[in-house]
Image (cartoon, rainbow, N blue to C red):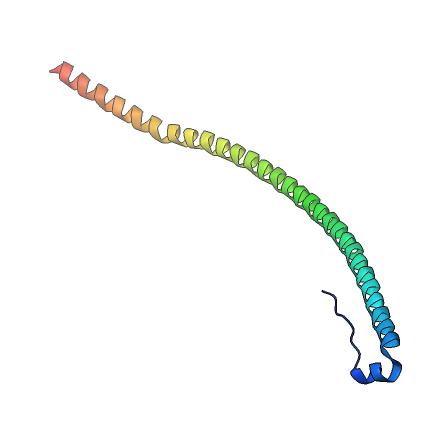
Amino acid sequence: MPVTAKLSRKFYDTFGDEIANELVEWFNQVDATYRGDLRELNELNFGRFDAKLEQRVAELDAKIEQRYAQLDAKVDQRMAELRKDLADMKSELVRWMFMFWAPTALGVVGTALSVVALLLRR
């Protein structure tokens, strides 16, 4: 929003309307020129800022992608280790179950055979 320059009535009276109006017009032209230059400078600065921001966002995106890939690789590695540990634990558990149930089963079978043998003797 342009601001129009105005001079005091005393200035008009001292130098006359023609000179005062020329001076006011010159001030307004200078103001318009500076405003245009300032607008252009702001647009250039914003363009540079926008380019720099876009570059930094791209760098940040690349860094996030890299860290995500590293994290994904670590998770995959740990999941593989966990699967191996679970497989080892499963085989260990089956071995211990056999070690505990085999003597129990033999005892039950032995007892059953003893009972059958006693019953057959009678």
